[in-house]
Length: 96
Ligand SMILES: [Zn+2]
Image (cartoon, rainbow, N blue to C red; front, side):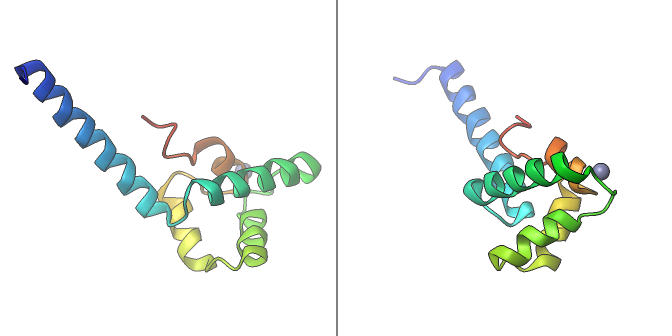
């Protein structure tokens, strides 16, 4: 039997899962790719710092064969206006 409280929790979880899925849709890449990108940025920013562009993200996209214009839009829409912001802000799983 399902209590009112259980039902509300189910609705809330479904809502959260939907929001999360939307954020990943906006980003355009999946968990494994994002982890790979963030590891790449961590390494590159550790060497040279951020020059307030997305050049390291772009290098990553080029080397992985990801379409850059789509990824660029997804990153910017997710709070990543430059490489260090991508590292700091872009993680749909962390925002919940
Ligand atoms: Zn930056």
